[in-house]
Amino acid sequence: MATVLAVANQKGGVAKTTTVASLGAALVGLGQRVLVVDLDPQGCLTFSLGHNPDRLERSVHDVLMGDVDIADVLIETGEGLVLLPATIDLAGAEALLLMRPGREYALKRALAVVEDEYDIVIVDCPPSLGVLTLNGLTAARSVLVPLQCETLAHRGVGQLLRTVDEVKQITNPDLEMLGALPTLYDARTTHSRDVLADVSDRYDLPVLAPPIPRTVRFAEASASGATVLSGRKNKGAQAYRELAENLLACWTDGAAPVTLAVQAE
Ligand code: ADP
Ligand code: MG
Image 1 (spheres, rainbow, N blue to C red):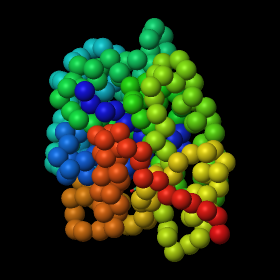
Image 2: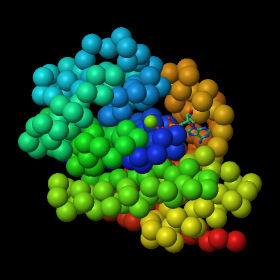
Image 3: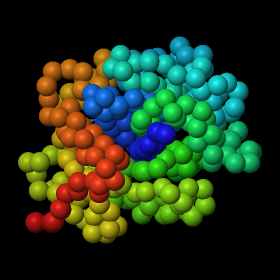
Image 4: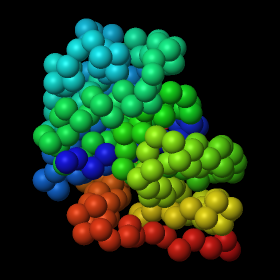
């Protein structure tokens, strides 16, 4: 049975999509069979893995609607990842799903069909707390929250944690909050550290190690349809490799994830 990880934060631009692609590629490098799911109608994950959403006939939308088998929609990417792609059709899914009973379970049901074929499934949630994100959280065993280390990063974290609690009470009692992942981290400034310390105190949220450094390699990679793991050696790829080792140890041995001790200076 696959371990399903949802990557969620209703704020855009915090590196959700980058984390799904890079962590996924790093887990493939560790010998895992990885499926990544694009749940964002913008299709950025699909695009950044080398597939143009505008040219795809079928997507996760058709799977959530129950119109096609998930196996007929999956596509391979260059780096050994399997992708359940999104197209702009997904923008209509919110409204269509709302009219259906069991609407939060559509993704969970679809994944159940293929979950024996993968070790890990990573879900890229859209920047909202709507029914698509509820589907991601309902299907998941764990949730990880990428957090950009800048002032006001905490805005919205409380609301996200309340949503996670509600999902636990209603559709997915086993959902586990892994913690916040610091992204776009600038180790040269104390500001990044202060923001992390503030968030972890305020919400009692573990901060996962290692922080992902800010580097231009991410933009270069996604423009070329690959992840930072596929190019030259760089500190961004190295950070996602360490994160992959950290999470894999926690899923296979039941260990607690390695976290950062953050203190304001
Ligand atoms: P989200 O999915 O949360 O909206 P993205 O993963 O699309 O965020 O990232 C937003 C932008 O930030 C993208 O242009 C991406 O290339 C860039 N980015 C992500 N992580 C990093 C990083 N560690 N360093 C520099 N740029 C990054
Ligand atoms: Mg995104």
